[in-house]
Length: 179
Image 1 (cartoon, one colour):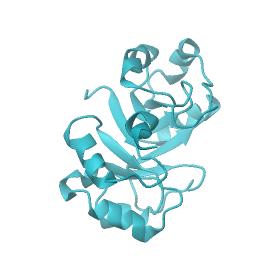
Image 2 (cartoon, rainbow, N blue to C red):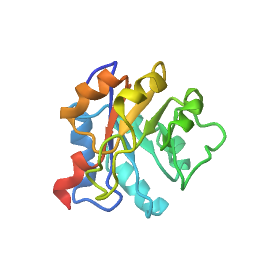
Image 3 (cartoon, one colour):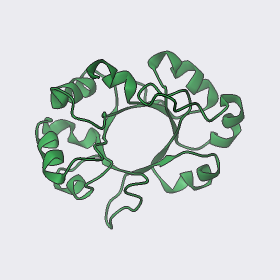
């Protein structure tokens, strides 16, 4: 982990065996700075059970993509806005958001960080192809807290750093073995 390059793990949307144990290991072993819990089809009870199964000292390193009310209940690290949940509730700080176009980057300063995808061909979504040229992105993301998403693996971190990204988010890399 590097203080200057944020590593984010995003959970698979479906249920993974021993998921709380895997999330705990990802955070404790330094594989990621933060874990985004993205479970679009889960109800609040299922989400609460997963959070409860993760040690409390790691809660500040978790960020929710839904059921934002749990962020305060568990003192989580923040929330992540997306197309399903585009509005932050009052009183919540530490907000990130998903962007899918360079035009959206004009709003990046309003958030702690933004994810931009797909930067490379997706690992977890077959057919979801890279939408950006890294060289062309550099001047557009310079000075902004933009995290690359889509087809990201640790082997691509040097390319992303060179392009000016503030970090990397990975879903398929962490969870593909559970498919």
